[in-house]
Image 1 (tube, rainbow, N blue to C red):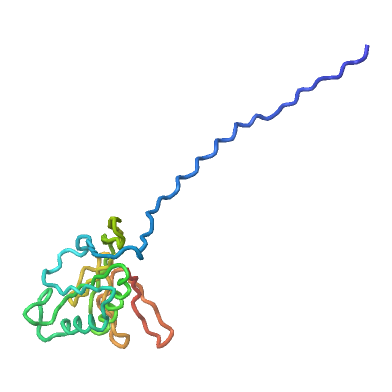
Image 2 (image 1 turned 120 degrees about the vertical axis):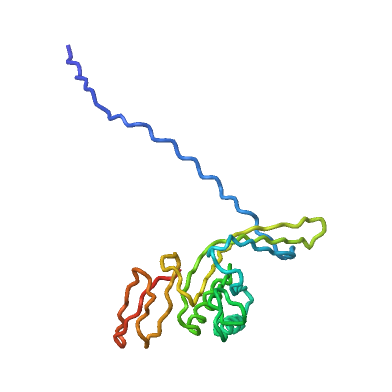
Length: 214
């Protein structure tokens, strides 16, 4: 008899089946872009959020910076009111110098708002600052130039900035607070915020407070 071949058992590792492929995410739905060549804007309304800085006097000087505003006109008016003769109250009144002013801007006017504030701080010394960033809702009504086509209303959210400048001391613990800028040739500022650091400059061996802007 011929010898029979020996049989061998081979152990095959058992792996779990691969997981099913994850479903593809649904396509992002974006509203169609408005063809402005066939529409004309007939109205625009901006609904600001509640005032982000509560407790301000009702008669405070409010400088609303628009995209088409002239910086020199805004600063000429605000500087004249802040440097006026006499002593004013919280927001002003009685023809005296104002103690506080608020600048607000949204959307494309944010950069212009910050520019106005920085220039005014250099023209009128000793101003405390509180900055708040929020969002405003803008609604635009567009009318079709073609007959039979209905108009549309577009709603969008734009960033808005509110900056309070005050000659009177403000709460240094308030988020967004910045102390007055001191004259580099004058004595050290007495209104440094808690935790503020000093940065030593190599030129002239001077020290300036280092604060973060909002």
